Length: 156
Image (cartoon, rainbow, N blue to C red; front, side, top):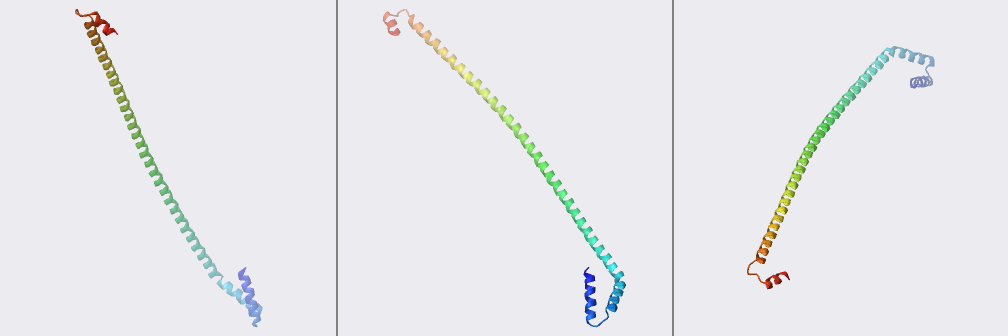
């Protein structure tokens, strides 16, 4: 389109300059014909260059895609390792918590038994004191030299 417009304009300018329209148009056609092979080669070269550039771009984007996939794969592996470490830490924490709970339960059980033993021991001591006090009272009340005044004095 642009070439046809340019040719028409060129022929007009040459005609205004006094040259024959037919002669100028024929000369342009001949020049076009002789340069057709050269233009075809240029077009072919340009196409090859463009295809080479496109191919390079495609290879570049393929490399970029592979790099991105590698990065993603590495990131997922790192996440998997981190998750595995986290699970291990949680499992260790759970076991420690279980052991701590077992120790606390054992400690509480021992403390209850000790308290029960102390309570039982205190009750036994209190019973012993009570028995001793009774025995002393009985002994005091059954003395041979006991008087009625002492009996009434203790009672009230």
